[in-house]
Image 1 (cartoon, rainbow, N blue to C red):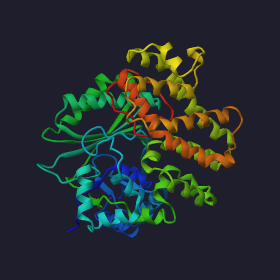
Image 2: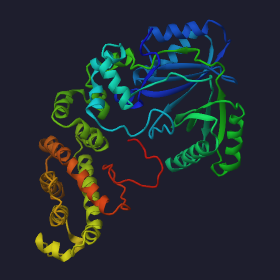
Image 3: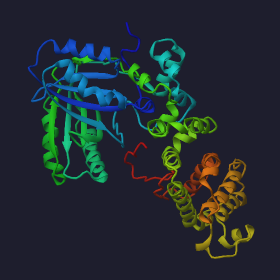
Image 4: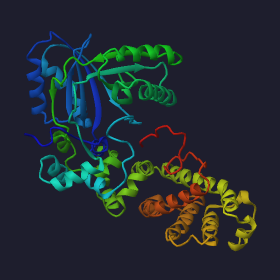
Length: 465
């Protein structure tokens, strides 16, 4: 028996190997008994795993759920048409950011760890999937990176609900998703294992759920949507799964097809800057060398910044790189400036006293990044809290980098790598400083473009970027 048959990777592992979660609706005419064997043969011949194909009631015959590398995703519709050789209508839905799994496993917000970051290694992935490393598998299960799909109790009725909205604004999708999930969680206990995905294709939102004990809960949910979410002017379509198990299913592994597609690439680098291998392969050696010299957990946390910065460099657009630096430094400086006086006051100190200690004589509105770093450090020092602030030294270096592009004294051709390394070296210090500020004032908020440390605190799920 396949030891991996009832196990599943956390979606973050799929994403790190470049796989996308894709759904397809298939209408096949004529529908015949050989379709099951044909589809199984297709998946085996193309080395595709993490695929489930459900037979559904209604106009469409099949719903396909698949984790696919973009190379396989590009060819998959053609493979299906060629395999079935029938009159086929095929519609596609690709899950995009934010990737919301709002109940049940896998949980969002996996902690950064060596355990998770080592999973960029193809050999480690294969060893675990093939049952050759039981100790690591146990650790992955305990960490929530691998979880069991084994079902307990009676077979549920699975259903999918596609939702189209008249507007594609992110805020509208978020509001609709949240209201829908909140109602199901609090008032519809017979609907379990709910996931709501945002994406592009045959709908804007796709809800997946299991019904236990009350089939009519599906209709009750649709009625509630019509009665309570009418202001969104959404249209819905429901797909009820016809059988208790998928018509065709492969184990939830990283596919052999994916490993073939990424051959010659560093999976970690590809996850951060896929454009390197798509358009800028001649820069492969220098970019991969950079990634070998920096902290993987820090790069993952700074993924949005690193991607934008390196893409500007690869395009050889000095302005694009400088925009990243300007945004990072401008927002950080503004945040620290806005909070430095409340920070001192809440710590029982006079602002003027701190200014004198750091030899600052100008107006509070003109205080700059380097001086702000001095200010916060000395408030902590005056409060006797500098025992764990070794990180402060890198921030001083960072303030010098802040000034170079602003004054035209920065050449991205020569300094792109050392500058990015310095930002990543300083990243833990920035994070620690913002944590100290938030500890003093828990209500402080700021919407950073690149720093994920100070987002909204309204209790709703945050986006996974």
